Image (cartoon, rainbow, N blue to C red; front, side, top):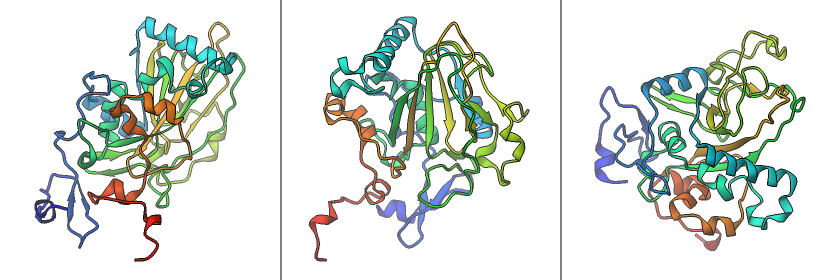
Length: 309
């Protein structure tokens, strides 16, 4: 840690944390000069608006509609249906919803803008690599009647250390922990099969009421959107699936998941051959997570190679 960082004092208006060395102030930079400004394809990152930040912070979820072109959607849906119906025809490293035309969704400019705000650690971000991690991905395919109501999660302020289902705040800043990013590749009508949410439950101090076990409870909220929309939600927000109701079109969402740079909740390893084909910046999303290397500026080594101190 540099002398400048150790001796700096935060202003009264700056969010801050304690550094691990002698309890010095660890500044949470408000300037974005270290946050990446482009994605792996060189596209400019799209920051969240003040309203979007407020909506996500208060609700625990945010919908941004209509981001993908019809040409992209057609290609992506075709790839998804091949994964569903004929996965074995693809090379093994392509049998995943982060491959093919879906790969560019993992660091779409709007996704990077969101993660820069609610997940990234600026001191470990740069124009060469992202300051957050990619955690998991799966494809969901639902036809009419498929899907089951099952509320889970909530109370993200009261989780044990190491549980990534958290939501933390200091004045002027929110951190979302384990966060889901859902790309809806077909249109969704409200309360007809999209994900359900209990607004504000990511911050709830009280346990969830029994009334939420009823899908018709007025506490449940949801969304509608055109094809090509993206949904962000904190995994600390109480949410649920529901049965898909539209008989004219399937639900075809990609459920990607992100985490802070020093945290890992799931064991999920994409094929090395797939990662090797990615641009270096995109590949940085899949770094291993260990706190020593991710939360300090120390050079780290495999400690297994030093059995005697």
